[in-house]
Length: 180
Image (cartoon, rainbow, N blue to C red; front, side, top):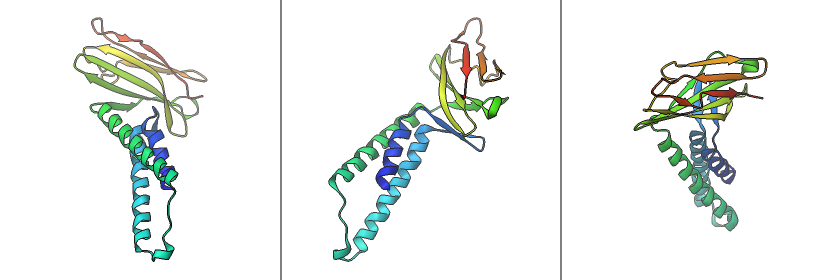
């Protein structure tokens, strides 16, 4: 089970998805870190049990299983660390109103020096979001945080229009939000 959690941790920490749980946005790297912690706890429990068992009851793990576990733990740790560093200063926002079938737009905005950027995620009723668009803005502009956007919904999907300024445009400005 520890190997399975470590593999899930590696996959989650390198993925672009996010989760929305009870109005909280949880990035994929953080999900990966949680699976990594679970995997580490399982390995620790197994190690303690094996060391306290009589010699004849000790079980040996396979070399392949240990290599998969080690590779997954390193990959998950690296992916989570890089994701955490990449999220320094990032702001996630759940946009209102919700669309048809509980579809929701979630954005992630960052700014570094004189460059701003953002991503829009389409989050379905299950709470799993996938990226559906990316934008850049001049001078570290964060248009979503400034409330400079419009979100409208049709029967099947939505449109997010992000407004920049005359001197600090947002490119591209129009993004589809489709949870289907």
